[in-house]
Length: 243
Image (tube, rainbow, N blue to C red):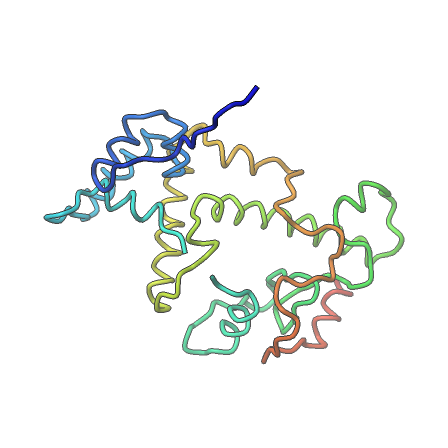
């Protein structure tokens, strides 16, 4: 039996007509397009108008919001990491004394940036297969990995909702900052107002893997052929041992 499959996400409409079509159509399509339920979308538009967003001659507020929510665009981890930590003009919020940012294995660990012990068991599935710790380093790595997974889920649900965060266009830096802030604001708005949001429900599952490579924890998420200006601080080895 031959089944002719036709794409169900096509539309000949654009602009306001396209937005109207989605809002009048199936709730699942609305969620796929705008990453939120219809009622939350309408509530967000109302809130933005109250905060000063105004329609223009050729575009209504709903269309503006819809365009922003569908923006797609690449940022490279190594370049971002190195640039953020070495460019003082960016005012990057480094961790205060006694506090630390977690980094993956393979990233440099300057002061305040805490990585796991290398050449030791690290990923949670490994600990589930054999729960007994072989040494103190594995204990540290277990809690480092657990916290890392919580952080991954927190950012994963946000990035999954907004494709532009996964593939940021080459806008000027100030524009990119505004996009990050705007998407996080909308994300938080949905969190406060949507009682049953499928993205939040999915990412609250502790066992979700979030596309982490559990087969090789020494693999960095950036091109190792690149030369970074950031170097590891020996003092962070002492911090690991102390913790």
